[in-house]
Image (cartoon, rainbow, N blue to C red):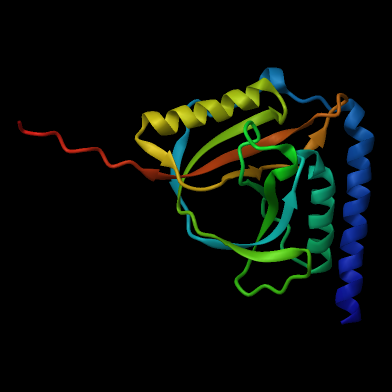
Length: 203
């Protein structure tokens, strides 16, 4: 038992040092917004349901830095597999939801029945049919907004409809540039359902 606790504390210490290094390098980091790489066409994928450790959040997205620290710290303590991409799930549209009422969470895939500690909760992602599109650049730029708009447009034009909360899967460690903007590479994921076309009448 003591050995497991010591290993968890060691992982937490390593993560803390890693975060400090990232902060020190932030002044030299630039979001490559002008070189944003986006898949020209979204794609449809089918995934199996999976369990994940969820850190539920309410309020401003500016809390992401603190939320990441909490999630990584607890994941290290519980010796969870951190080789898998962390993701965010967003339940509201920030354009028509007051900031204080925004509901979102950070998640890390885990096995079924994984024992967790508060504030982590065990949840299950049930959505199988997903529309996805990759984005690289600033998370607060117009380019990211255009990426979202393009995904929604593609979904509509291809006879699909949104069927669940938006997910953003982080494909690398997010960094903060000299302007204080978070940037990185993510996969934008929207659960969808196919819209049945009405049969053409013979009359």
